[in-house]
Amino acid sequence: ISVDTDEPVITTTLEANGSGVYTPITSSLGTGEYFTFPIVISENTSNANNDLLNTSQIEPQKAEFALVKEGDEISVDWYVDYNQAVEDNKFKNGKTTATNEIQDSYTPVNGQTAYMHFKLDKTSDYGYRAGTENGLFFDAEIYVTVSDNAGNKSEATFPFSHQVDLTV
Image (tube, rainbow, N blue to C red):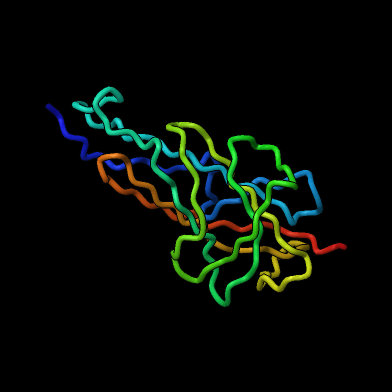
């Protein structure tokens, strides 16, 4: 009998720059207020004595997440889907948090890419950072946590910088 003691693995399909910061996927909708961050959650099978037949699995557990940004809470709309294309009618109200306080959840599918879609309101003050290039940047982190059915818990933080265009 083997006991599953391996934590689930949380990754992204994006590559970080040299500073460890990710650039989200910009949607073709709007002018930069929409962006997407892909997350993959998988059962850890790195242990030679452990394979998918005797792991406890992550399904049907919930993956929980927060959009972390220093300062006051700011409204940001979002939804999570397994389709990379953004659908404007699926967004729901959310907010940033200055801590890793969980804001929402979704059901992960082992090894499949979930797309976290975000929509900024052009009239809100998000504390944009002026870039060296033309443009402003929304800097934040995505915090994700998940437990498998054996109670093994993982968490990951993905810092990102998204360029926005405030043209109305």
